Length: 456
Ligand code: FRU
View 1 (cartoon, helix red, strand yellow):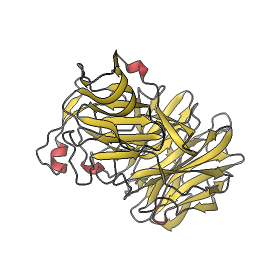
View 2 (cartoon, rainbow, N blue to C red):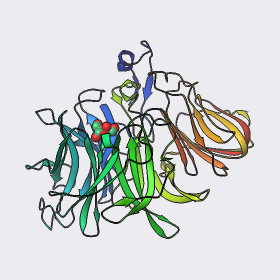
View 3 (cartoon, protein in one colour):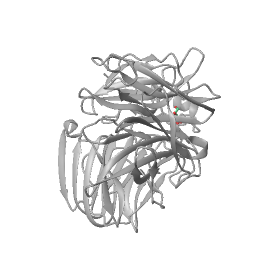
View 4 (spheres, rainbow, N blue to C red):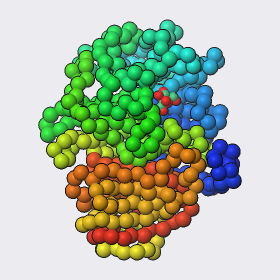
């Protein structure tokens, strides 16, 4: 099948009327079969399969009419698309982001002890009020039935969204955003239907704009449990537009606390948002929407618009005396076709590709230009510069250079390049960027000692 599409929509949506972007399906990244996609939602690992639900408009490539799309995978690389899981109602109430939980003890009573339900907890948004609702599935996530007494949590406020629910000892806990108050509110429940207020966290850290899409999970640090609270910030981040901050702290089933003062960012690029981790997965793994609220509706599109990031394994590691999340891409070796190894490479390297996995080791500042995007180390920052990448100025808020502070000794980077993205991983830093290159090249300068390249 020819998977290249001439983009027609982008010409109408972008500032540069007349741009023609050739959109080629990514190799490692999830895209919807058609139309609009934003946040990953409802991520859960069940019966050996990773479920990925996502914010989806089945009618066009624009953000509106939000439903939940659905796909499953055994390896997080090859996805099988499934029918829509949740729908906008006939009255136009949209199904915003949320989560799913497997109610193994049938605490909700939606299933039986022999056939416990998978339950989606999501925000219903009617344009006036946002409230939390349930839908249950008795066939392990294929068909969902909305609960007849929805919503189950309504405080009659317009910016209350993105419930993240998990089981803690003997009760369900929900973290949910009071977006305009820069607060994550925690609720507890015995049965997912009745919710009691537990505590509030925030405002704290980056509060220049609204908070949404909380995620919360434990990670091990030198044999001790730390809890991470991750919060998406809607605008005015240092990266430009939206981004994700996280807090390292403690959670006792009721309240999240932290001593952290400095803001920690999950990603220093402009294209990693609303990330969520898979509940019950063998290894803690997250995925984010590769776009930015500031310009998503104008980003180049074909018959689909939007891709998810590479799924990433998360761990907590000490760098320069403080605890940071380290993200590592899931294994993608099953896609590799060719391999090269270069010792002290300099200048243009004689091969090309649009899906590459690159490992570079170096002893000082360097520059690697790959398919028109420049990745490098200069002074005390790691940067990604996409200004030479064509088709990138589709919106005034797209910034072309992204820098992350190098506060630790850097010796190696991993760069995963796909048809429309570059993701850079270096210790606790990641920089994720959408790109729309027309040229294939690899050029190396500076103190690179070795370069390994796998092409898919
Ligand atoms: C984040 C977000 C969520 C909301 C969803 C609606 O991108 O704004 O807060 O639930 O998108 O599509």
